Length: 112
Image (cartoon, rainbow, N blue to C red; front, side, top):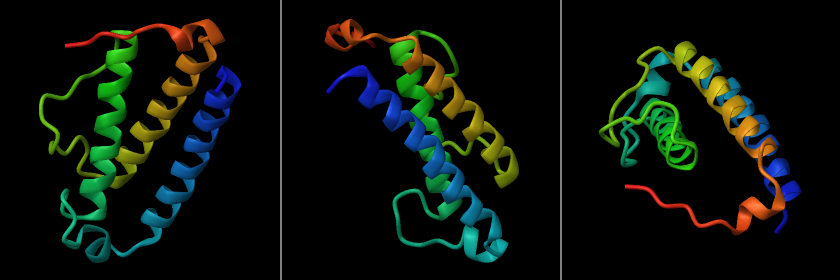
């Protein structure tokens, strides 16, 4: 798999997130926050967790950015703020991938 594949996947990730958040923003508040039996409680909890894990991995890859200290933290209680943060994180991910070349894919990454 070459770097172009990763660039395509990063672009797809952004597109998919916009579609997912578009559907989430249309949901009634009660349905959006309803406990569903999933590990992070509700759709809101799950979307928060996905943003959180992307931040963790980008911090590991770049050494920059926020690194939450708990996996179940709610970063943003407001779903519109969560969307804005998601868009910013997707942009950050795309910029990181754009900066990589094929040789970077062969490098070992260490983190603590």
